Every structure is written in C-alpha cells, then in structure tokens.
Length: 302
Image 1: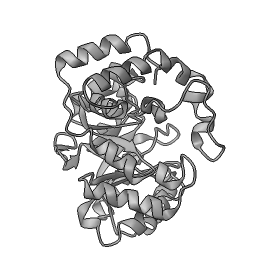
Image 2: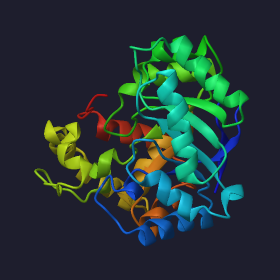
Image 3: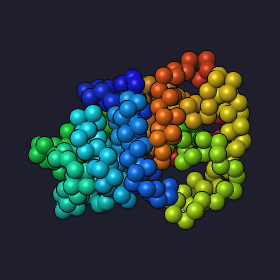
C-alpha cells in the first residue's frame, strides 16, 4: 500500500488507516477472534497505520492481543479521550500502554478540544510524554482551524483528525487550509460517514442498542436520511467506473491535498480488504468536478 508523510516533518504512514473503534464494540460487540483476524488482515495488505483511543471500549486491549510480536510492522496511534488534567493524562497513557502491551505509541492525540485546560499546559504535558519516550508524535482531533494554530504555537503538532467525507465537508472551510498552512498531516476520520457511504442503510434505519450509532447525532437528527438525495447517484457513478461506493468514499477523501491518510473502520477481515482496495484509486481533477456536481445538494455540516 502507498504511504504518505504525516505532515511536513512526520513519518510515512499507509494511506488507509485501520480505525479500531468498531473492533472495540463501538458498532456492536464482536468476538475478540474476529477483531484479531481483521487486524491481521490489515497488516497483511499493507494497512500498517492503526488508530484507536482511550474511549474506544475494549479496542486497545484487543489490539494488544493481536499485535503481540508484530509491533515492528505497525505505526500505532491512540488518543487521550478524557480530560486534559496532568493527573488524567499521566494515568491515561499508562493505561493505554498497558492495554496495548507496548512501552510507547507512535502517535498520541487529543481526542477533542478541552477548553477548561489551557492548551499550552496540555501541549507541555504531551511534550513531557515525548521526552519520556512514551510517545513519538503529537496529534489533535476535532479541532477548529484557530485551535490548530493555538496548539501549534506551543509545540509541534504532526497530525489532525477532522470529520471529513463526501457528505460532511465543513473541514474544507477552515480546518484543512489551516493544516496545509501549518504543515500538519490530516488523517480524516469517518470517511464512510458512519456507514452511510456504504449504501447499506435506507432512510429510517434503526441500529441495535449496543451499536453507538443508535444514538449518534447523524442518525438521531435525521441528517443520514438527507444523504439519500445523492447516495444512489454516487453508487451509480462508482459502478460506472468499475468500483463500489466504499472505495469511492475513501478515494475521494484521499484526493484532498492536505490528506496523509484516512481512517476506515472495519469489523471483519472482509471489510478491511474492501477498504484497502481503495488505496490505489486516484481520482482525476475532472472526476472530482463530476462528483462535486453530484454532491452539491447535500452538505451535512461538521
């Protein structure tokens, strides 16, 4: 699989990243054996960048089981999901390292802004973890453009995780330009829009209670139903080009010049392989223009 640099001065990472939220039960509980098989499938097809988080249920621990003996193949990222107090940051990284079964992670990210804690203090805490050898690179997630600039004023920020896909294009206005200006590599999350861009879910679909999407704002607020104004046309466009909607969604996200990688979640080895198959599809400028015309009626926001 192709790789790209994680920002101006960052390491090379695979262009499709395995998103481990579903592997921890975020989309419904799955057996550890199934999750481990999916993780191994990712490594086997060159998807060596893996993203998880403190808040992803059992995701870190199942990764720890799957990666035993294979850490030299992986660029591993996790996130600080709780508050940004020094006490929590110290305990959270230790918990993550223990669950993952490693002495360091390659990328440690702030899962979301926490204005109750000054960002200069938070970045100082991350730099301390880096100096201790517990993390190698620093990232942020779900930050605005101005929040990126503020964080970058206090230390090196290598990566950013915004929500970005064909249906949620808000990041183009502010976040992606800021990342380009600052030399921050973007690893877009939710390229499949929580499954909407798989084409599997008709308007009004109800998820089981153990699937976090059952109370996700995209479905709770009815935004997902609006996507059906364009999803059939996108499916047809992909089929006309010998591909499917999942591959199109990932390839479209990777086409933005700020993009280092895109985080595609999966619950099975089959889904992993399907996601990975999008890595070699490079959409042309004229194709992106055609897709922009299809997408114009629907932009679901941030």
